[in-house]
Length: 157
Image 1 (spheres, rainbow, N blue to C red):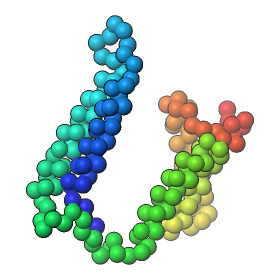
Image 2: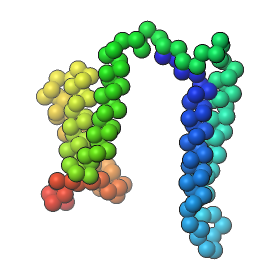
Image 3: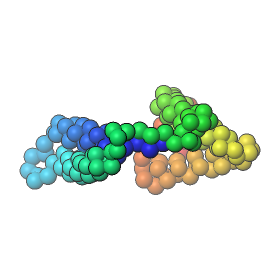
């Protein structure tokens, strides 16, 4: 599937505007030259510049007014199932992460993806367990990013 760059540019421009406006509402810090909105707004300017380049390039490449062209692989139903599986797992993670916790939710989603991709079930279980443990150690212990414990909260050190 070939999507014109102008469409991605428009989406990126919308994101840049959203980030700029959201950051503009951050509280000002007295006595400082740069407030908490400075860095996000600089990033928003970079996103807007990238969006302008994508829109310009997309308009230059547009032939015959076609902004979306499906390739042969995009016509196979199995490819779309993988996309729907990924999106549904994101929704499930967002809904169950606080309840079940990062460990259980991450383990289940990683296992489902590995089995879908053809990994043997026992190997998928082992690799998923190792992946979740390593990610938890890196984020929760090394970077001190709190990940939801869910039902395992009493057992986490």
